[in-house]
Image 1 (tube, rainbow, N blue to C red):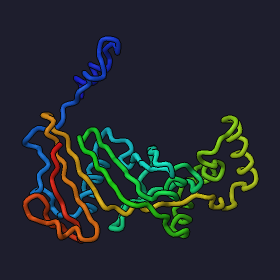
Image 2 (image 1 turned 30 degrees about the vertical axis):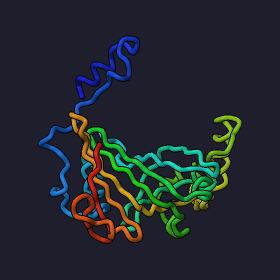
Image 3 (image 1 turned 45 degrees about the vertical axis):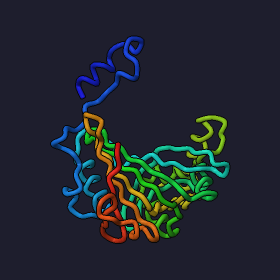
Length: 244
C-alpha cells in the first residue's frame, strides 16, 4: 500500500495509469473451497461483510455499485448503500422515480458489486430486483435521521432542477411546514430486494491468479453437478471455481 501511495504522489505526466499496481494476497492466503465454513453464499457474504465492517480503512463497507439496463438496452451504474441482507437477498433504498427505478421497471435484471480494497476482496451479485412491501419501506424511512427523511422528500431524484438553491428552498419550506414535531410523510421512495441467481466471491492474488468462486441458483441447476467442475452447495445452490 505504501509503495502504491508513493507512485500516486509522483507526477502523472511521468507515471501512466498502467504503472499503478497493488500487492494482493500471496499463495499461502489463497481463498480455497475447503476454507468455506458453510457452502452457502449468503452466509459467506455475511462473514465477509463482518470482516469488512471490522477492518480499518473501510469507511463504508456497504457501499455497492448497482448496474441497471434501460428499455433501449443501455446500461448504467451508480453507488447505493446496501441496507439489509437475508436469505431472500440484498436490499437497498431509492426514489421510485429515479433513473435506476425506471430502468428496473422496464428490466428488473440487475447486478451489484462491492469492493473492499484493504481486504483485496470483491463480491458480485446478479439477480432480479423487486419492490419490498410499502410497510417495510415506511418503517426504515422513519428510522433514518430526520434530515435524511426531509432530504428524500425534497428531492425528486434524477429530475432536472435549475440550481442548488432550488433544492435548498424546497427543503426550507418542508421544514417550515413540518416544524419540529410533525412526521415526515413517505415520498415516492422505498426499498428494492435483489433476489440473487449468481454470487461471485473474488480475492486478489499478487501473481494475478485471482481466486473466483461462484455460487449459482436457478431451476434445474442441480442437474449440472458433476463434482468435478460444479459442486453441490446448500439451500439449492451449486458452486464452481472460475479462472481469473
